[in-house]
Length: 385
Figure (cartoon, rainbow, N blue to C red):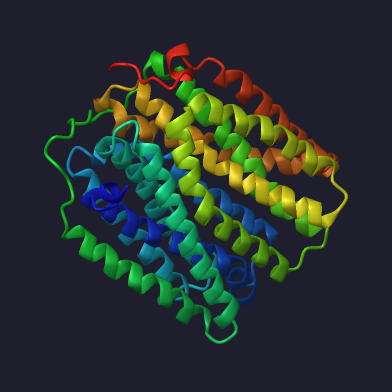
């Protein structure tokens, strides 16, 4: 474990991951209040901006063409620079179109970094260690989120929006500039294909990625809305849930990574999907606000199990396919982000339970799909590539 933590690429990705996580949480925390109080936007404007925010994830496959000219670790650092600029500039453009522009800048940075982060982790760490690294990075990201949440709980009423955006954006820009000057890469890493790749043998990875994106959108779009709309959760109660989630995940994420390494993707994903069936049905039927909050915490915990989809792909993939396939996978994951919130919102108007029953149905399909993981992998024995 200590050897992994001393790896230059791990340290590089850790620093950039903390920047990406902290920057995104700061942006999310300030977004609604800035949009309403500083700009005076309504629900229509918010919906447009949130939909546009997902477009860079849908376009993640275009990073393959950037790889023709720029090394992956440089793209990762430059992406963090874009994210920092987006956060930093938001307070200077208090208008609908200004918020669209800064949101898109931040989002391109975040999504392209995440694509490179996943790719580099699987290239630089072998099949037995990559789930551990993914878990460590998520755990440290959760700790960063705790610090950011505590900052806003303590100082949100003390500073202007512009000052708070600058407080997070400027340090991220500085770190990104230093990262652009570093080179943590090694020469013994397989050269990646520089074109968009779709392979029939990766069909299960594509399907699981699509389903994971769809389930995640049900959670993102409607879980907190349920807590506020049905159970009258206050801002403080939602903030407390976020804080508790990240404290729990600081300890659990590394443990989940070790479990994937020990027990294999089939068992871990089967547990995730079985549990999420219960969680989504629970959302639809729950009548107690504290039980609803507990479901939200469980939902957030099981989201970390999605690491196993990436490590499953690593075990079946040609090492040269990792970078372009991660870009394609990120695009597939975000197909649902473009479509589901709008469809789910219309279904909510008919009955708020319908989106959650749909989430349970998607979990059933996922549980069925994961049974197609090759028998050799079910025994947690990596195939020879």
